[in-house]
Amino acid sequence: MTIFTFVTYTIPLTLVLLIFYASIKMPLSRYKVAFIGYLITCLSFVFLGEFLGKKLGNNLLLIPIFGVLELGWFSYIYYTHTQKKIFLYTVIPSLILLSYELSTIQFHDLQQLNSYTRSVTALSLFLLTLHYAYYLVKNKWQSYNTSFFLFNAVVLVYFIFECLYYLPLHLLITGNREYILLFWFLNSILTLLFYLLTTIVICRITRKANILS
Image (cartoon, rainbow, N blue to C red):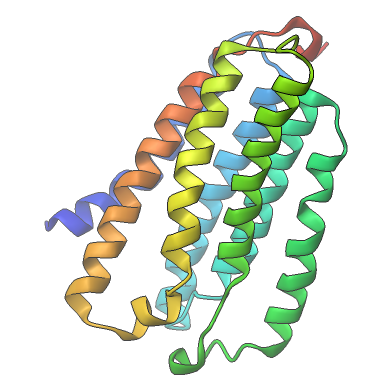
């Protein structure tokens, strides 16, 4: 078993364990329910990607779709914490771009692939974290929550990388195989760390106002 095969199996296993951990960690808050939904979405796309890769030989269609769903889950988490609808509106530009992209991109032709929806959603999430920081300062840190602040910091760092990573997507797919594997491995390791860190901090948020009745 190569290191790449090991990482491939580690990601879904880690997601299953994190979903189980977050589900039994009490209290059950709206933050946690939304984040569990995000983890389940990630796990579903892992299996769906494997299925399409084997059956059709191309699962690139899932990249922009997952990006928009990811943005949707995180926008809802931020909205739950701040009650500011602007966090929900961040999804709209990405949905418009996704609709346009899916109607124009020839996914069967890797040479023509030039998907930017994933980078746009990552950039939107990065801007969303900055807006949350502005929200805290504007409200004089009245709604400050240590765990959510750490959650915001992890999201900020991760999606800066994701935005840069997916910009040259067509080069990563059609370029040198060794470089492709290197970038894929680096992204997989960072993604695993992101799942672990965000799950830990989100499970520490016990704000009573967000506990489900």
